[in-house]
Image (cartoon, rainbow, N blue to C red; front, side, top):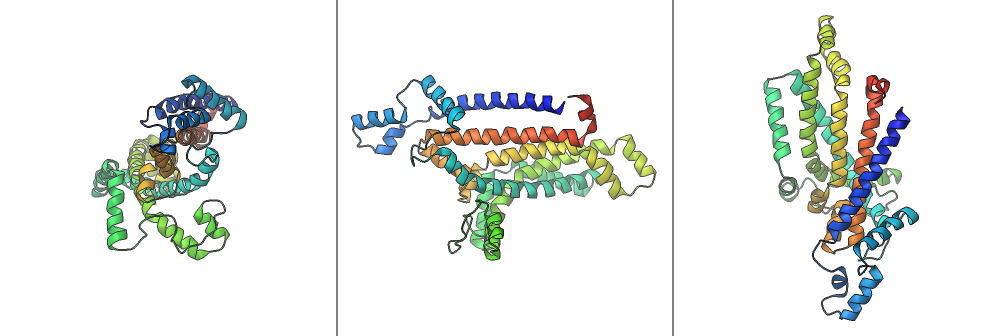
Length: 338
């Protein structure tokens, strides 16, 4: 049953990724500018430009370029080479992605902890000042532009108070040797507490900035789910039997409200991994988001295509894991054969 469900989802994932690859292949070619002209400069001769276009395959028909791209992915496992650096795109993505994952997972931990806690309190103390204040905060968090919030936090906590660094992942004087690309893990593996504190110090502000929107969304979903469950008969029965409020809320209500909360948390994690572009750009965070922005500016087609495919693959994989978690969270789904 689970195996059949998994096969269906994997087939759907393959179709989605194929559609994404086609759409992004078209889209990047609509970006104004000629990569060959950008690489050779404005004074390049027409012969040199044509020679470079032929070398890069840019002079071939669109469908020929697209099917060649797909063939390279399936036969060689390659996303092509960067037009700017001439390095394999997959290698460069592997160097940048750990920074994005570290930022996204830290933000998600902050968002899940605060969002679920606030949502539970808002539901338990419905229509109280706690509920009203938390929902105003959630609405503010959803409505606040990330770029504006990031600049505001930088101005207050970095420029004026000097509590946290302005940008980057490590201080200039830090000579930590990367092993996995996750600086928090690398510093622990090296038993370098100074580098761990330095990496964490640099991570705090970008993580809080990125966590703002998912915190608000998770809080609202948790409140709505908890309110629905708290009105169920079994919860009222547990209260009538004298079960403590903490046990009723955490053991009975939260467990049964877990599916929508898990769903929204998984979706937000996928969005964080694939949408940290603004935060990484603001804080000069050397991750995949800032990497793809530079690639767009340089008209580096293979890099843009590869990054978008990795973002899409990450998002659908997280959604698949969330769907698979339903079988453990709710036995009724496992028994129904969905």
